[in-house]
Image (tube, rainbow, N blue to C red):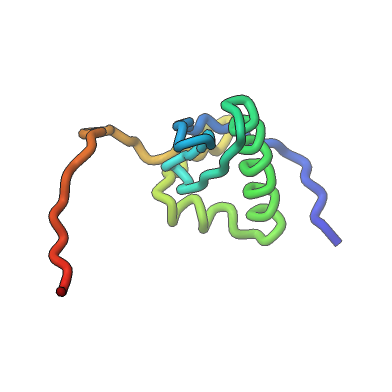
Length: 105
């Protein structure tokens, strides 16, 4: 029997939406999750659904805190509530880089 959920999580996630060929990809490095859609809007919608299913499964399995800690999230306790914050992320480079890979003849 599924557990009854009697609370809600309010999260702020960094989400990148990029276009790869004909697909739009939504990705969050905070959880290393991604999904795609045929349009920007569909990618956003699919990502929201993915996040809801992901967290519902974690809560049902009782592994929410474990997984967040493994992803580098920090638990912050205040008098009023407990919060989880995603790891700080600073993009140092976003470029195309060339590589030469030796291949046997």
